Image 1 (cartoon, rainbow, N blue to C red):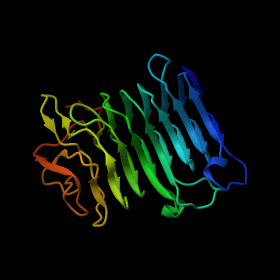
Image 2 (image 1 turned 45 degrees about the vertical axis):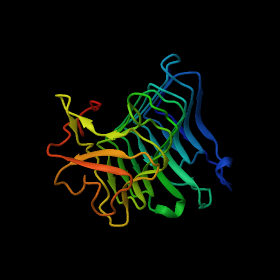
Image 3 (image 1 turned 90 degrees about the vertical axis):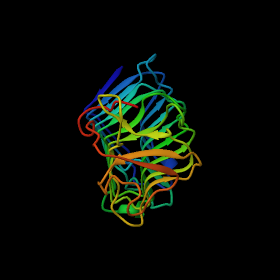
Image 4 (image 1 turned 90 degrees about the horizontal axis):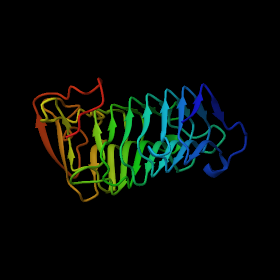
Length: 276
């Protein structure tokens, strides 16, 4: 892997009329890299990874700060990568006008077979939603790869915490959300406007039994908790008697069969999950 550490990538130009005007910090194609403790600001894309996998080294992004990027990290048909313990301030670049465009912390797209995605923080800044449509993590057409799990991340004051579109698995494997925390999300904590995610949304305990997902939801009456409009019903497992983990409370959910479990998911906040 090509190492990149303690570096800064920033577009310092004072003129911007649209997202395409901004530049990209790192554009990795067919070459693995490791990006640690670096800063990305006011860019079109902070890190773009195109068709990286274990054969060419894939990539690691850890301990970085992304601020004001239309896409903090964007992957295309990449696998076996790690995006861990980064901080994403989801806002428009300072010199760009407020537009009705999507601004996304991490965009994962195309056929993807496993990754580590955990311990990341996503939040807006003082401008809030005037910046655009703010989305923490956006997954599109990842297919049904194993170990495609969004695990133990925090989403604060965005329009959508996690969005999934297209085919992201269903019956056997696919996209799974475990131990994520949502706070003051305005539209939906988990949003699937079309397409699918893994049918069984649940963790697994040490004995191999199903455990609650451990996701916590926004405590606002107008925010959908698990908004599954894709036509593929999800079996969603949650901790009984915990209103913040119950998908039927407050704003409620769509397209799920809710199942409560009396014991908590002990993987939350500790380690990567055991998958059901």
